[in-house]
Image (tube, rainbow, N blue to C red; front, side, top):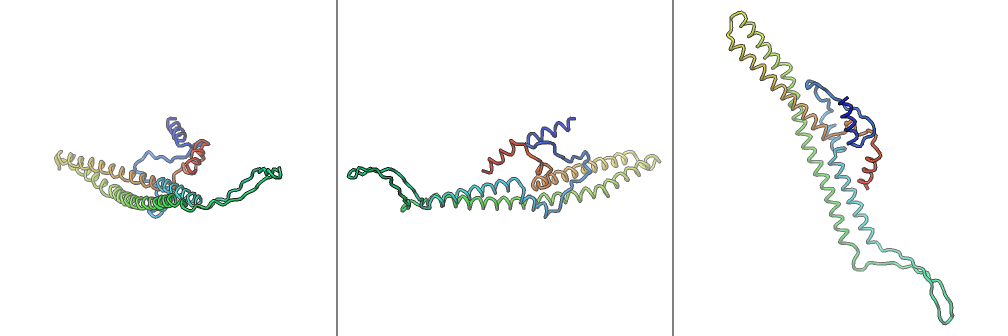
Length: 238
């Protein structure tokens, strides 16, 4: 019940309408299920929040630049109004069309500033992408190293330490080893298990970081959003 309540609270905080399926595991021994590094990098460059914000900034700068350029184009002005002619004692209706040509101020200052903002936004996106490439590479290396270390503990180090403890205990029971040898073997097993848990922690932390950097597989991305959340996103994009 507490888990379901926590999920509902998470959905409400994220503006998601309904439930989402969040896979959970209660065992550190279950490694994170991740795609290869190339797929993760592609997902990060497409769906990472920093990339999305940088692209929004580029679009805003593009619109501002287009607006500044449009304001420099001469405007066609139409006018209409009555005119009274005293000699003929007549009132006529005058129609006029004029073209406002900016001779001195053609909005060049604003155009240059908007163009600079546009180029700056594009450079910021490239910087974010380079940062993500480095972060993905570093996190992937840590993930791979931790996975290799976990396999080594599972297949070699822990079984060897436990076997040594078992043999030492048997030797002690037969009077062929003193108790200090048993304590030493127990200490090795304890330290190996602690190191194993630390390695599992590093494995899951690096896996979680990779999921955060490349959130394409997140179960909440395609979930239906509530009306308030949709209106907020629409306003942000505008």
